[in-house]
Image (cartoon, rainbow, N blue to C red):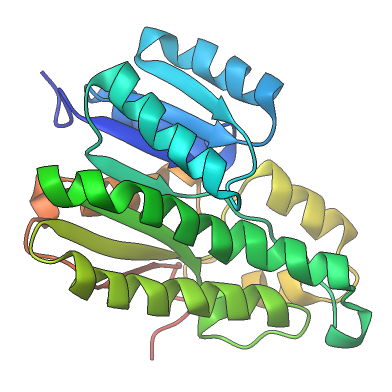
Length: 247
């Protein structure tokens, strides 16, 4: 029997990176999981690696229909919904004068709108049963970095949304966020190789711990907030950033 036995979780961005690591740890600790994202093939591959405890919903998380399908899938797959982990996001870098309409829209949709849509769909059942929501933010929300203006705005929105939602959900729903520092994922590795703005290098060079986070380090922070160990914590932003923001 694991810490999350008989619990069902929705994990967005669950096909890779932090999302897949969160899903794997949840399954290892007894949960059923619904992986949500755009890439059906990648989601199926991830679900196959997790076994029968995992199922998928492929779609755009910024669309209300996808959020509704995810909640329905959780109930059908695990008999309940207890945890929502909003991990999906994109991390584009562009100076503001180079930011296209499409890049702006995609960044807000992936990093903020999707979180709002999933929370809105999950709230009624979580309010009835009790449960936990954990959103993903970023150091960029509080540490200005050229090239990350729209991304930072989206993540600052996630933090404000998290705090307000915690009030709306209390006392039955706990809502928190993890503000993640630079983390070693395929996406970040690719950005470090191709970034021309200097944003990624600026964020990573001055970390007091001297390295990127591993996905499991961010995932463990997320699971803590989702677990009964954090039963008296709501409306908080947990900073897991290698000391990159100490103010």
